[in-house]
Amino acid sequence: MSAPIEGSGKHVRHHAIGMSALQRLVRVPAFWVLIGVFGITLAAPLIAPYGPTTGDPAAKLLPPSVQHLMGTDSYGFDVFSRVLYATRTDLPVAILSVVIAVLIGLPAGTLAGYAGGWFDEIAMRFTEIGQAFPQILFAMAIFAAFGNSQATLVGILVVLNVPVYLRMVRSVVMPLREAEYIAAARLSGNGTMSIVMRHAMPNALVPVFSQFSISAAFGIQLIAGLSFIGLGVRLPEPEWGSMISIGAGGLVFGQWWPSFFPGVAIAVTSYALIGVGNELRRIVLRER
Amino acid sequence: MEALLRVSGLRVGFGAEEPRSLATRDVGFELASGERLGIVGESGSGKSTTALAIVGLLPRNATVEQGSVIYNGQELVGLAERQLRAYRGREIAMVFQNASTALNPLIRVGDQIADVVASQQRVPRRRARDHAVELLTEMGIVDAIRNARSYPHEYSGGMAQRALIAMALACHPRVLLVDEPTTGLDPIVQAQVLDKIVERVVEQEMSLIVISHDMNVILRTCTHVIVLYAGQVMEAGPCQEILRNPQHPYTRALLDTEEPGEGGKFSFIPGRVPTLTREFAGCAFYDRCQLRASLGNPMICVTSRPPETAHGEESRVTCHFLSATDL
Image 1: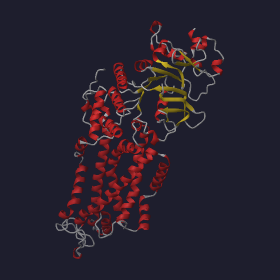
Image 2 (image 1 turned 90 degrees about the horizontal axis):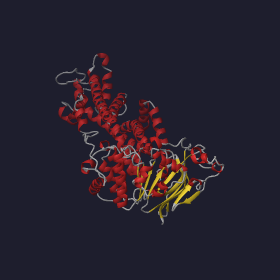
Image 3 (image 1 turned 135 degrees about the vertical axis):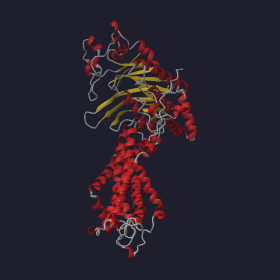
Image 4 (image 1 turned 135 degrees about the horizontal axis):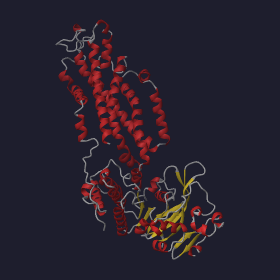
């Protein structure tokens, strides 16, 4: 009987994404801005003084005032109310499309990285083709082919985001093929599927998690960009990009408010999402 | 006695281009039920490749060109992954060389062991976790309840090695394969881990294969030994017999390196292990052999492969000059 070995003694609290991560996040201003944006999304009907699509023809292009905090646009819509309500268009489309992209990219990337072979070849060629197209041109072509709807918009964002996640996950999983703990798991008689789910995929979750909000930010910018040229979200549905486009014509006449405030909304939301994403990435890099 | 595991004529090649690198050229041995076998040799002699070939976990660029691995009457070479799974863990378990890299850094050690228990014995998660704690305790890890909840980076090398062995034992295998069980462990922990392995193997009436470059490790744990050189068996037999009366010049040289000789100097074997791509018409050990030099470099050593000759009670040796070594 050999003598027992003492524990290593250094029982450091180890939570990759746990308390310490949250404690660091609350110190980032972007985090609170993002919370605010989500709050607005939920409470838009309570805060907004007017309906998002109830225009007053008698109150066109009024400058910001107490009645209309951000003025009104050329249809007589209250800009402030529409800026608030637009979070309910932009955020769900952006987030839904990233979620779908992750749901496709994560398993596909894992399979490509772990199994390799013909699936990897085909998947990589498709991502290369996809990433070779200019995004806006690609989106315009798809809208032309499939018609102008929000479903098409989500589809386009998914197609543009899947390659990002597929490549990211593949690059994390690929070196694991040679990892000894994977071999050890195979040696214990585990099936390929359970090994991939338990040992390979979790490694990819962390980078995917930190990329998520950054993708959502780019999603919002693309939605706004496409709506600006009249694709995706259609009037009178409130959307920041289309609001900018409505007001753009008046800019030369000094009517800055219909475009300026939705532009600020895009900038603030993107800042919040990217800021949180970057902080998450930093947390991951330092702690792992 | 009927062998539980019979490896014969095993030849494993690496890479695609000719000439192929041969990690093993001709490895054969039998493992009886309850036997404890050591495989000893320098780095590059094909020890680990032999082990990986047995469990069917050779790297993608390696293939078994010849030979067979027969476990309990079933040929394992060429079996599909799905079929091999029935043997891995349950029948033949293996403990890898680097304990710290063989544990998944993201999962608590106890959960990793419980995973194996749950999949092998089909018991509920809670039971599996309790059993993992028991296994850790049996391997001599104190405060196993707390340590089961630790992550691998909180483990010392010796603890990680014990955890891995616990994981292998969770499957109740009939053959336990241990590859370099003492890498990175200090001598005291080494001895503890080795004794623990033997204790558990004897207790559960398993067979054991220990792979090591260190003859002392083999002697401490095993009843039988085979000496590998350049992917071939040079000598094989019971430890005591070989220790007392080594026949092959390579075995002798290996044993000499373990003890300091005259003047307290450790001896070494001059030269190096031949490259894996080299072809041999004669004896693989010719270049470094002291015996042939003293015999005046006989031609037969270069022109023909030495046959396997029985000697002693149950030993065999691969040398043209078996009788000459008694000179």
